[in-house]
Length: 324
Picture 1 (tube, rainbow, N blue to C red):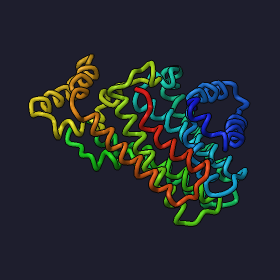
Picture 2 (cartoon, one colour):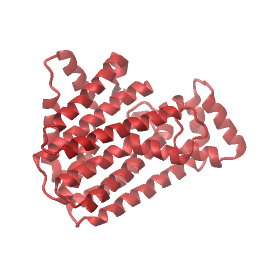
Picture 3 (tube, rainbow, N blue to C red):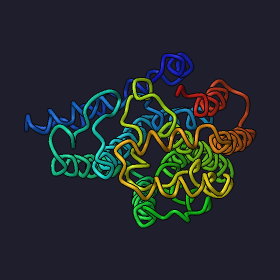
Picture 4 (cartoon, rainbow, N blue to C red):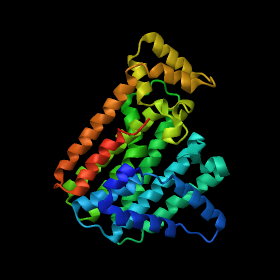
């Protein structure tokens, strides 16, 4: 987690520390080979965004309990599993400035490690008395898979529209953020209306987060972002800047982008970057993310003023202020 965000989350610091402990304790194995992989993938856990959302939503609605810590650990396990599987799908070599599991140990080990994390998240979640959390987590992971499958189905679709793009990222990224906020509030006894408002906050924040991530994939600096960039282009995944460019750029520029996207140039990503960056398509995507963040902050109006609510508001701003 960034130092700026760490300074803001002091109100949930004990619970975040507990999540760290439970995560490591739960995933211990008597097999050293498994432990080695888990320790390596733990390096990817930088921002702890999803546990933070769950704990802040819970704190904003009432008192935090051991169940909140358990749920925060569960969503972190699910998130880590999606990262490991994503790196396999994208053939990524770098994450958080370190080698990915698939790059180090191959796709077989990475897929099985992702499965290990998912299965253990359900094992941990089943320790809670309520079945609502388990059912919600299961539904969420199904939706994440649906989003990934929809994205794969639209690879190299140069006619992908913005509506379908938003549907993809809402499922593959935003729905887990929404679930974190919903479960955090629900576990604190919040009303159905407040739970749904916080769920909407998480959905808006998560969608904006992915739009910003997709912008960084085009214009970001690998040394700053800390992961392999240009993957979307190489994998034929159209993201919002390219979708907008293919609808609004001059005809000859649109034709050039289509040719580049369909080609196999070794420096394809760099050429596409040089084509899109001078246009207004990056600014358009940034504006869409900004609008979603404003909507997210509006959803928090249902909460009384408190430190956790103010942190949630600030976190939303951080999503679109990430360095490139």
